[in-house]
Image 1 (tube, one colour):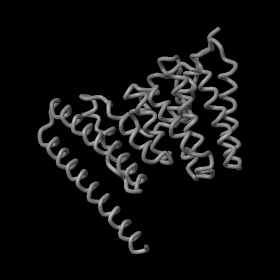
Image 2: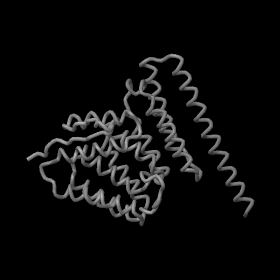
Image 3: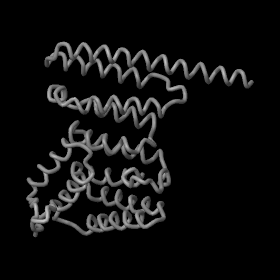
Image 4: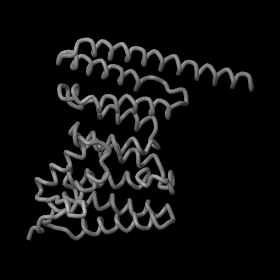
Length: 269
């Protein structure tokens, strides 16, 4: 029995390795061909090839290595997302498929969802799908998945925060957003430390604001964009959030001490 189990494990590992190597090899050939002749037509063709590869990957067995497949898919997404020249021609339509694949393979890959959430809502323009996928991920994990992460923004409770931001900004559903922040408050407490208590307090204040605000939706949007700005991991997202905040009437001043002063517009009456 031990020999059978050992052989099965080795066979599965080798099969996965060969499959991944073959797909990676094909992908490298595609990128090399693209670099040799850059044009709009090539970018479009490359998008179609990536779509086929993602479809194949969704059907490809993981042989128990789902986290490895998710890691590999996320690295491919970062390459896709960061190719600004290509994305200017084709847009970000495949972002959702990367998101779906990673969520299916490894819902515990928390860090990936913060990037995918922003990209899918802001640049792919599918916030409704973002909210649905974030809920699927949340339903597949527990609040104690990383209760005392040294990097606070890796905590699972931040998934609720990001979901709440999408519900405010793009769905206009303040009731759903309030629930998300109430859940963020509950999940924050699993840290059982001062940081967790502070995170819970912030989420609680946001939930209370959403429960009491009526006409002042603009300030709810400002708060959501400020959250995106403070958590942005790339210049593209940061610049987009800054533009949206300025359009909402927020003013950014540099003080004599070199700090940034944020001046909010007056509340609607």
